[in-house]
Image 1 (spheres, helix red, strand yellow):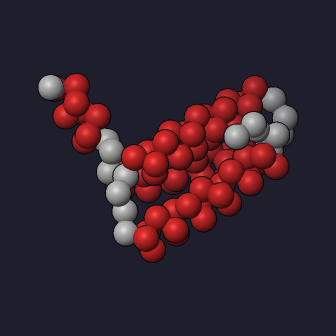
Image 2: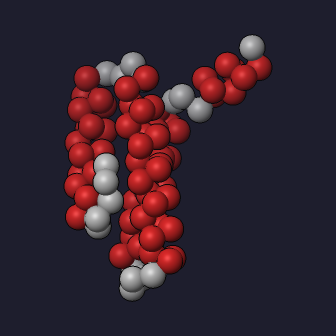
Length: 88
């Protein structure tokens, strides 16, 4: 029961928005770096967080307008990740 409460606590719209912010931060950090390990780590972290956001969006029940807006943001982020060479 405690584990379910923990999972539910992070299955919120606020958490989803935070994940989008983290993905964008990692993308911006990666863009500021040349090629190398640090850039790759930022891109990998962005990709993992992006995948988590996609999964969370599928679990949340949101008003249509909110769902559409976040779906668009995720599509834009996914395009940025693919442009950076990430498989999403």
